[in-house]
Length: 234
Image (tube, rainbow, N blue to C red; front, side, top):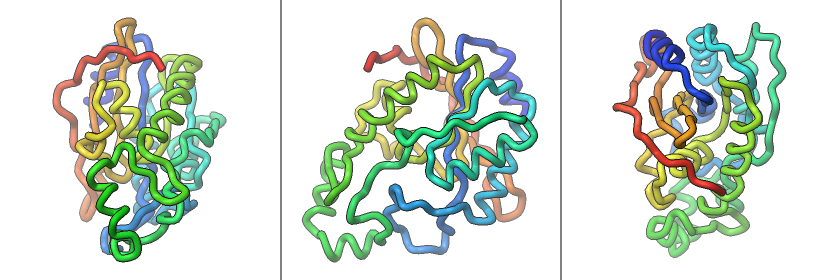
């Protein structure tokens, strides 16, 4: 992992963005549920995942750390930033998708209470809005301007700590992928993504790198070769 990071750092570039998903909030043994803007804290494993990245990223000369203002991201960012003497800027625009009345409910409960709406979500995931909630297209419209502004205003190395939905719509944006395909992008708890921005646009250097917590943890999973993309104006 450290050698991969060193290679990325040594390659230089106009801007280097480290896009990190917060650590674990729901254990693997728990029933799958919708979690949007409900403010859940990290589990012990989630804190260990953040600590792993604090150690791995110690030599990265971060110019700024920006986080969603929800607790699970702020906790992750604080652990990673520990010892740097840096302020963490929080942005409400980087919050997870608003799931409205479905927030906190299990998939089984939603399927039983809103069977037609649950089916429509599966058929048109990018455009579907749950009751009192956002669609993933709404999320992208909220998040991308905040992401672009953060990159524009930061120094060379920027760490952004956010949520799976937020990260997926950002990656769809920089890769030119339709939001309908966002769930083709793996994004586990504590996953790190490495992005370069150069004069001709963005390049995804690594995707879904996972912290190695030893026995019972996840091994680092480097991405395939980076994908060149053009910059999309928003």
